[in-house]
Length: 376
Image 1 (cartoon, rainbow, N blue to C red):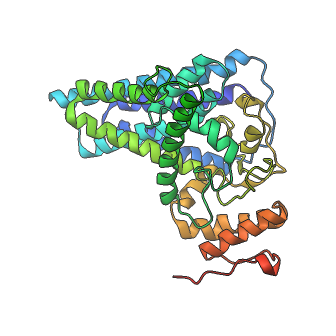
Image 2: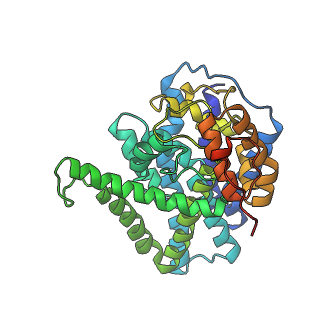
Image 3: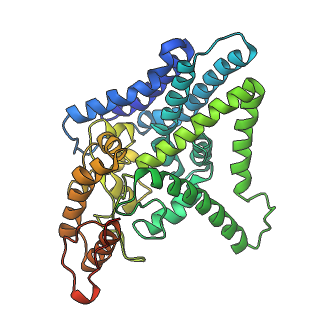
């Protein structure tokens, strides 16, 4: 069972591919998996068990099968859009919306957790597969900035993947998207400079980014024309923003002194019985930051760390910022400040609270106590 649960990723992809192939109202099947997964994650008790995996091969099948399934999903979509472009198939507005939302959803869930796992592997083949997979949410070089910026700077102002207190999910989606692209570009160029290599050297990772994105755009244009390009543009944008929306939940409101060690409380864990296998255990987030060399099933659910409820529930709540802040963010961060944060982190946290117009719920020395900001 500890191995079989990860095939849920493959099942979700299969549902999405079948839905696009069948057409009509079935094109919504991929998106409909979301409320089903969320309901199960809320109904089932939290999963605090460590995994016992007997076969390293079987447990990795869903990981390595995923990118071919993403290619199959996009191939099926482009086939349908090509028929629409040639006039051989009529697609209603509802069907086009279903294609965009279903394929876009699968481009984030479960695609982001799977390619995240692949980009952390120490072999060139899974890393190459990760670059192909991240192309489906407009970020072929995400691995560069993620490994060399986020993992070093998490919970500090230098990390675009850490949202500040009071920041909405909508603002963060764009911040993290731009930050991911920027980190990938600057890190790639710095790597060339350190090795005294020209911008035009074949090792420039930007060639991979533009090359993979160009292939995807060209294939769409050839098969499905301008209409197909518009639809796939919507798919890619939805996947990108949705993936960053779930990213919003990983370090929300946390602070860390730049250069200080990463501690148990510097990432939120989401230990839902469905979220864990669908997210390939990335929701055991702090253990991943302790040692990113661990494969997903080796990550320990750190129940003594900072916890959030169901990741699916948190995502939906975050779409309504007042609900998110009142019922989830503020209570959890108050507990974090009072029970986990160091004195310096408490000071930094209260400065963020003041800027966000939140209550100052931890006393800090008078000389460094932040002044509340008047509500606008």
